[in-house]
Image 1: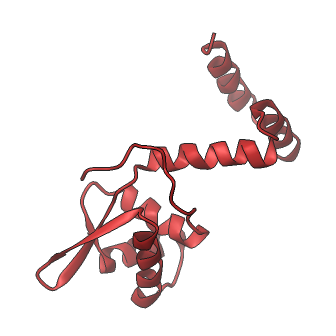
Image 2: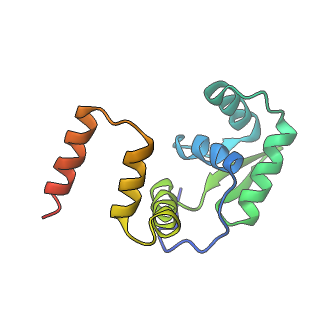
Image 3: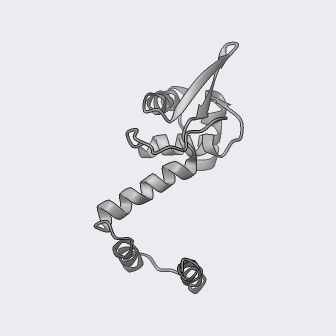
Length: 132
């Protein structure tokens, strides 16, 4: 499966579309709508019908995140954008929107709203020290 690693310029995915994409990204093979629906319902405790998932898949295809190929009577969906690339773009948007373009502002805000364990703090310190 070839995935685009260039700068993403597509429209953002909705929360529901992200769940669909996460299921597809976590699979190494193209998936049918039945497989996608089953995994979403299992993994995320949803009770979505095939038609609901079909709507989200169609939107992701239109936005350029997925392509579909027909094999026999079944359509298979595969990502055209890597999960890591999409994640990076979303993080940059968070820093820009909620941290005024500064990662330190975003981290400070995050630290005020969420309790971190000592182990998490240690990991973050290690990452920061490793950036030098």
